[in-house]
Length: 471
Image (cartoon, rainbow, N blue to C red; front, side, top):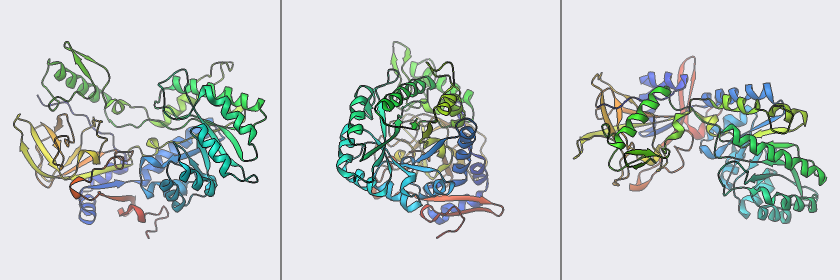
C-alpha cells in the first residue's frame, strides 16, 4: 500500500519561490545544501493578522515577538521595524535584540533567569517577567532606589491545566505581593502574566480569571498593576488538508494495530500505546492536526465571556478596567515563514524492503528528536514521476536514530540523487532547537528571502535589513 499524502500548508510567497526553480537553484549554489530560508514578508503578514484582531477588540495591547523560536536576525529586525516589542530569554537573546534595534522599554525578559541575565536586563532597562520569589529578592538587591525595575509576576498552578515548572504558584502570589509592597521604591509592578502549554480557550480563560483576581488583590495593597500578559502558545497551521491528515493518522494506527500495512519504521509508535489490538494515548505529532490560524484562536479567546463578570467577554472586561493586554507570540509570527532545503545523496533498499532516500542533513536539523513531522516533504525533481511510492527519508549521521521520517511518506516517484527536498514550516524551533553538528558538519546557512516586482532577492540572514539595504 502507498500511504496517503499529507500536503503541507505553504504561504503564497514561499510557494512562488519554490515554483521559481531558478531562484531555488541560485540559493543552493550560493549558500550550499542544506540551507534554512526565512521569509520576513510572511512574518509581516502574520503580524498584520494578529494586529487586525487586536485593533478591533483590544485597543490597549502590546505584542512581544518571542525571539527564542528562531535565532534569525531577519525576524528580529522585522519585528523592530514593525514597532512591536520583543521577548528574550537569555543574555545572548537580549544582546541580539539590542543589536536589532530594540531599546530597553521594548524588551521583556522571560523564563528562568540567573544573576547574569537579571543584571544585564536591569542595566538595559527591560521589563522583567519574574519567574520566582528568588528573582524578586535578587532584583531588590540590584535595583536603585530612584529607578524601580518594571516587573510582571508570572503565575502558574491554575486549577485547570497541567502542572508547570515555570512561574510563581498561585498560592505563593500573596508572598510576592508582600515583597513588592515592602520594596515599592525598587520594584514597580506592571501586572500579572501566564504562559500555558496549550491553546485551549477554556484553560486560558481560567488563568485570566485568576489573574484578574490577583490584580484586584494588588490594588488592596496599594499597588497599581495595569497589564494582563497572556503569553504565547498560539498555534501554527501545518497541513493544507485536514482530511488527508486524518486519513494518514488512521492508516498509521491501522498499521500499528496490525489491521493494515505497517507504515512505521521498526518499533516506532509515535507516542501511541498499542495494547490488545487497541491504540491508546496521543501521538507526538498532534500539533500538526491544527487547522485554525493563530489570529482566529486569539479572536475566539477575546470574544469568550469571563466567569463572574456578568457575561461580559474578555476584551470588554479588559477595556472596562483600563487594562493593557500583552502577549508573546513566537510560533504564530513565524508560521510558514521558513523552510529548509536539502539534497538527495542516494537511494537504497533496506533489508526490510523499505526504500530509503538519504539526504545531506540530519533529523535534528528539521525537527526535535522526539517529534515526528506529519506533513510531507516536497520533492523538487528534475524529471517527471508518476508512480506513487512510499519512502523513508534518512539522515547523514552514523546513528540508527537519524531517520528523518520514521513513517512512510508518499511521493509521486522515487527521487534521484541531486533532487531537492523541501521541509516546510521549519522556522519555529525546528531550525535551531537541536540542530545536529556531529561528524563535524557545519550548521546550515540561514538566508533571508524577499520578493519584489523583479523577483526574489537573497542575502545572509545577518545582513538582512527591512528597508531593503543589505549590509
